[in-house]
Amino acid sequence: MIVRIPLVAAALTAALSATGEAQDIQAPRMMPPPAGEYTLDPAHGSVIVRVDHMGFSGYPIRFTRFDIQLDFNPQAPETMSVTASIDPASLETHYPGEDVDFDAVLTGPQWLDVESFPAIGFVSHSVELTGPDSADVTGTLSMMGFERTITLQVTYNGGYAGMAVYDPQARIGFSATAEFNRSDFGLAYGIPAEGSSFGVADRVTVSIEAELIGPPLEAPPAE
Figure (cartoon, rainbow, N blue to C red):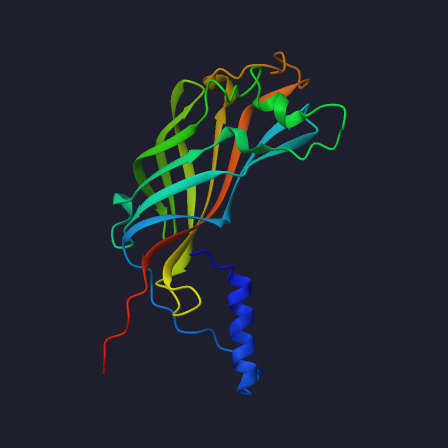
C-alpha cells in the first residue's frame, strides 16, 4: 500500500477541523517500528548519482526504478542486512538538447551498456555503528560485470509502527551516500588526463533517500 504522507497530514487536519480542534493540532501518538522485513516504498525513494563535469559542476543522473530489502532490527542494528537493485535502463538526465538522446547515449555500449548488463546490485556484509542514528554499511556493489566493495554512510531518519486507516504498515526512513571510482567498474571513458579537469571525473557520488514499508500495524488489544 502506497500512501503519500502529505495527503495523510491533510486528512488529519480536515478531521480535526471538523471537530473544532484545528487550532492546536497534535500529532497522533506513534509506536516505534518493529523488527522485520522491510521493502522500498517506490513513491518515497530516489537514487541520484553525481559526477564532476570539467570541474564546473556536479552533473546529476537519476535512476527511477530500483528496489531495497532490509532486515530491520532496532534492538541490534549492527545485525541488520540490506540488498538493493537498480535498473540502469531507468536512467534519466533531463538533458534539454533535442539534437541527441543523452539518456540513450549513457545507457548505450560506450557507457552503461544496459543490454549486456541489465542490473546493478548491492549486498551488505557488515554494519558498523557510527552514532545513535548512523552507521557505515559495507557491502559488494555489482555493476558492468565487476564486483567491488563500497561503504555507504547511512542515517536513520526515524519511523513508526503505522497509523490505522491512513498508513496501516510500519514505515521507516533512511538517507545514504557513497563514493567510488567508475573506472573500477570498467567505465573509464572521458576521464580527464592527469593534472587536467577537462572531461568527466572518475569519482562518482551516490545519494539515496528511501522510505521502507514493513509489518502491518497490530490491532490494539481488546478491552
